[in-house]
Every structure is written in structure tokens, then in C-alpha cells.
Length: 81
Image 1: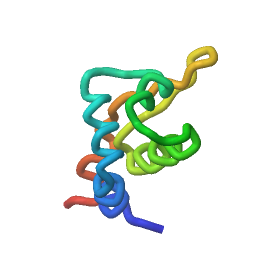
Image 2 (image 1 turned 90 degrees about the vertical axis):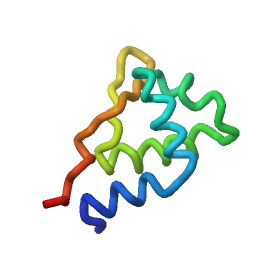
Image 3 (image 1 turned 60 degrees about the vertical axis):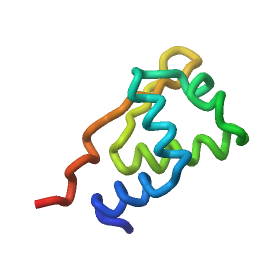
Image 4 (image 1 turned 90 degrees about the horizontal axis):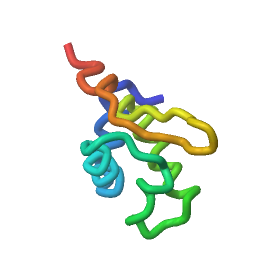
């Protein structure tokens, strides 16, 4: 299992995940809207979100039938002394 700092760097290593974080820097978005500009199937996109959430860089919540994503700074600085 990766330590928190490695999880953060692993999540940031992928350009798609960095683009997701950039889009979320403008505010929370539903997954369907967030995934719109990316040319991939929804299950593949959800894997990217899982990596970001495991690293503590985003949080997701379900509201009705929509899943929303928002930036989270929980993963930033973890593992750094």
C-alpha cells in the first residue's frame, strides 16, 4: 500500500487527473458534467476519481441521483514532516 505522500504524487502524475483538479478549482461539479470534456467511458473516468479521492485531493458526495465532486486539501501535506 502506498503511503500518503506517494498516493498524492501518484494521483498528480496523470494529466487527466490534473485536468480534473483544474476543473474542480472553479467549484464543485456533478460527475456527469465533470466528465463531459474527457473522451473516455464513465467507468474509466470513475477510476480516475477514485485515485484522486484515495489521495485525499477530492471528496465526493451523493445528492439525490447525482454524485458531486469537490476539491479537498486533506491529502495535501500528508506524510510531510
